[in-house]
Image (cartoon, rainbow, N blue to C red; front, side, top):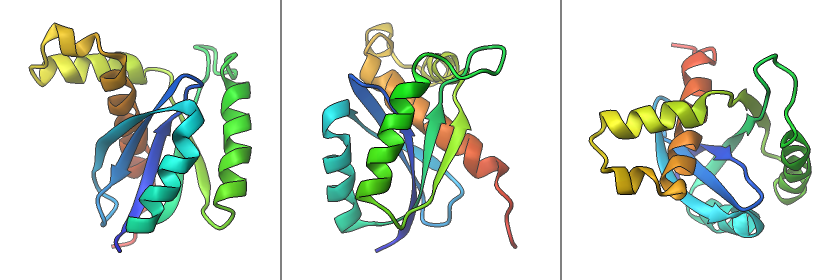
Length: 141
């Protein structure tokens, strides 16, 4: 089992999930899961890989205050803590992730029909949230 950091772009309808490489350098889009099935999905994943941290997108308005969706994320964080009490959680500002996800899809040559698929946007957003956290965290070399 390899150590993994899980990135989550939480949504009540569906959530994007990303995962780090074992060294914690790169984030990769993993999947999009219905919001109600997210905890079960992560439990299954945790049977195959060792999760060392969750990085969850924190919805904020342009002025830096939590947006309406922050309440949903808080409720999810409580659920996540109950299911995984020993795994720490970090919040990551997700203000521009969907804009960046669209840009990444265009730059990557994804067809417009694929870019309209919200599931692709969600999992790429999760990867951006996780990559931002991985890039910023203090590294011991």
